[in-house]
Image (tube, rainbow, N blue to C red; front, side, top):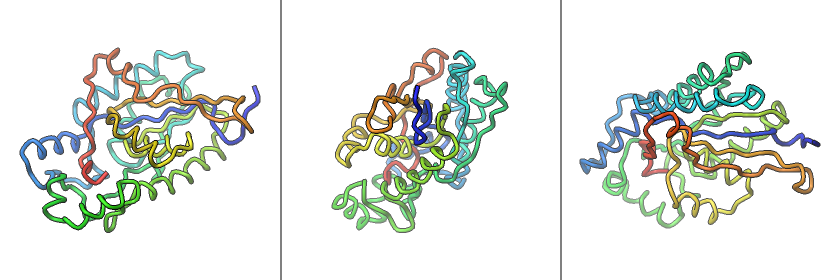
Length: 256
């Protein structure tokens, strides 16, 4: 089969397992609090116990694949929860026999929330009402909080990350472990979606923790082949592994 130099042969994009930030965010919203009680920097927030169970179940799903079908490249966000998820897969997903180790790429990091960091939706309205109004006017795709990022900013760095994948990993099977916004913005880029189309997908449901989004290369797509979506928000590996399914937004979901 003719391979385009632009794309990997297969691409999986996985959201990290449930984190302690997901849990803290739920507690804050249930209690009607303005701030989310997290002591660590967002980059340092670890997996919860359920997140570890989810990561282990996903690793088993990869391990059950024929060796030739498993990832050849593993890229992760440098955030601790993503690194831990990637480590589970590297150790227990049959990747060790290929001597595959996670490669950290800061371009895959979580969206930066700036002054809205650790605030709930009600907290943003209370503490930064002007940002709540700016977001209403501009929409979540373009709104950039002070010291933070918009979806467009995330997309800009992901364009660069995809170029690197094309340069170094074309024709290979690549696994990315990152965050919900990264999953959505990758879909926007790979499928050439519009703002309206990707936001409509985003409104349908949250991306579940350790859910799999999968693309396959199709050489018949003009002019030089392209990627076809095979699965999105696929949670069967968790159910098969007896792990809980969670779809909590990250702690900073109000700003997402």
